[in-house]
Length: 215
Image (cartoon, rainbow, N blue to C red; front, side, top):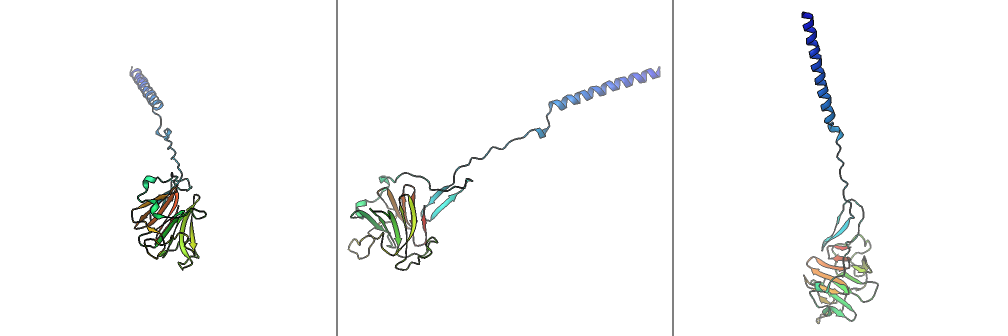
């Protein structure tokens, strides 16, 4: 009799264990392992690098991974940007002006190959692009833009120096005062205490005794 009871108990226990095993198997099938979930990172957007003008001290290169560089394309300057009458700076077919200090002399020339440019009477800093330019009377620092290209120049002549005006003997043309902008022939030149900046459809330069840049 006792043997029959023990056997019955063992049978009941085995059935309960089987039921538990079945529940565990069901749970394992409905709960996927965490390692199976993979989140793919989205690819970053790649845009071309751009040169950001930072007038008048220079330019800042803003990289974003493409490795290319180039000027920001812009349209021609608007006449509405002008704060002075271009006729006040005209000498025959060209236009000349100088900074209030007289150290920077600029010209918007009618004829190639110089276009719009400025030269310094005195340079405190010589750009590394002009290794043979030493600010001697026949080696003056200059910059210019023509045909969509800007360049440094070391000049022995007053290429961008206009005739004296207002009864003075100093050449350079009329003064472009701080805060004023001259617009002529698709070129805009602005005078500030930091120097002169000229733009021609996305290309141009900045120039002062302490810094010269092109873009």
